[in-house]
Image (cartoon, rainbow, N blue to C red):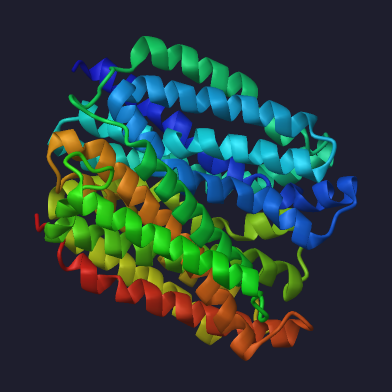
Length: 451
């Protein structure tokens, strides 16, 4: 592949990843405006946010299997088109029901954008370039974490909340046009699409994540427990079928590889830790530091900003020192940063004391992300790359869902949202929990490849 083609591949695959990441972050600071406009409760509003992420996780592996069969570039462009259609419906929504349906459509498109972009990029780059390429890809996607909350607040302040969705339309259409012209087409010969397995994984994933989302409160309803148990049973049936299938959607034999299994387990813990902090940190800034949503987003910059600054260099470090050393260092640094914040934060503590540990945690995340990505996709044969990327992203999403749930359970064991001082106690406990989860990720990361 020519050098210029590699640049196009990196730019266009990163664009899709950026769009899908941006759309989950930009909504966070527009949520109050949406709630006021529709006159809905906070419990109703949460599904305008959760529907997107739940759909991504539920449809992910189905989209990967379909992409293997019809072509990764074609599936990538289909995903962007569906995402654009969902964005238009979101912008035109006049009630919460239509908005939730539109967010589900957006999530269905986004569910294939990330794994297809990862598969195209990994296939197009030489093995010695993958660490650097994935680092840049991760950094560009992580840039959405930086500007998403601030951009959402700015758009709502200057225009209306609908414009957070309208901006996806021209970007998506241009992305489809250029991807069709510049990206190589790849597929997996002999790939088959099993409808029953697809239905099982969609129902099991959606049900489990929904049950986890609903179990954040102290009182868990019987229906939530039933749906969770049924979804778990469906998941077990899915795994049993995968052991018997000649062309499984999830090749379980891949987990016999220590780098693959260890990389996915460490990914689960890395993002369980991170998403627990994402859930509470903006609330801490607003409740304890009395900041508005826009300022809370800006105060996260020492943490999120490292993703863009460090990730490209992290990719080079992975190529030079190996996934194992860089992954372990990143997981440890993230954990240390979160525990440091917990031990030093009180309602009277200055925000300035949080800048250094936030940066350390962000650097850790920026190091571990590319290392674990390369460890997972590099542990499989080329024909399994797209499936490996899909499995990796499933572990990332499930890790995030469970991480939020665990953090909320820890928070309510020690604190509550009744006052800034009581909230601070729960926040610090949740941060220690997030730190411990990240450090635990060091154990499975020991299975990664050395340099």
